[in-house]
Length: 188
Image 1 (spheres, one colour):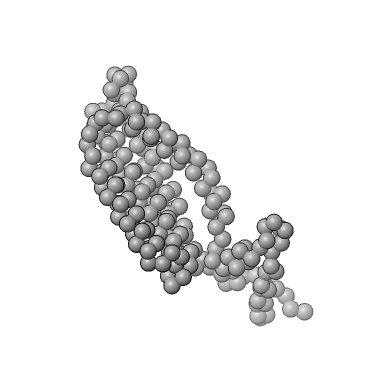
Image 2 (cartoon, one colour):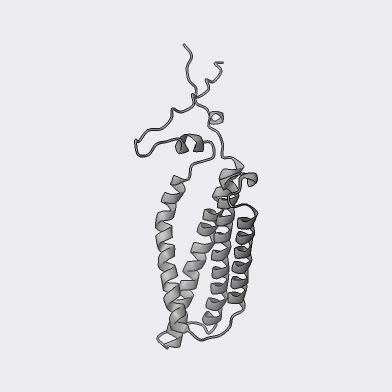
């Protein structure tokens, strides 16, 4: 009777496309979430300095502004990476839905987004302090919500070798196609 041996080599490693799919979540966790905390802390120090309720160093306002620009550019950059990965890995390029016209439209949106970030980066006008605060409090709440639900979303993205089985499931009937049989390891 042949015995089934499980070994590390039996499980398929992550393919390149699987690594590409986790680039933007990794960047968000490693860069954006810590930077968000730093910018929020500097914002509270800047406010307390303006209200004269505390005596933080005079550089907190400039540090808050500088890191806030990096945060905004980083968020937009990571979203662009996520969208490019989703579009590029959805189907082979010869099967791109919408054809050349849609590709040009997406390219124009990318250019417009980059120009908007550049305009935000160079903007120095101090006006609209309440809109800034309101928009950023909303953004911080959205980041917290994404931090809570993001791990769930990652668990819903199958690895490339799992996709044929997962996408073959009928979720209304709660049935899935049978798994491919595992190869038997050679006995010593």
